[in-house]
Image 1 (cartoon, one colour):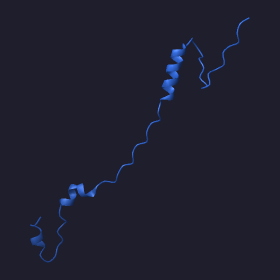
Image 2 (tube, rainbow, N blue to C red):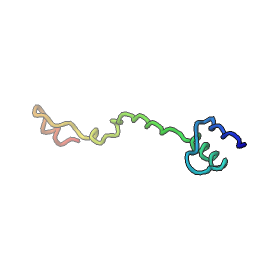
Image 3 (tube, rainbow, N blue to C red):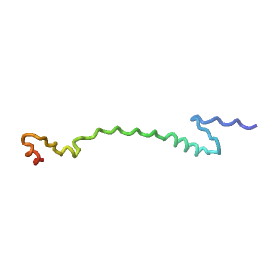
Length: 74
């Protein structure tokens, strides 16, 4: 009389085709167990305004008293 078939592994994996050795199954289980979910990207910090080169530019010269003097100053 032939022995009954072995029960499926506790993890729910089952070999559908071929004849996997216990070492191959162990390698598969380890590969699946150590697999990590992809990390979420870190939230981006708001831009730092002090590094903006436009800060060094002067404001536009408005017409008015002493406007011609302000046009020559940085």
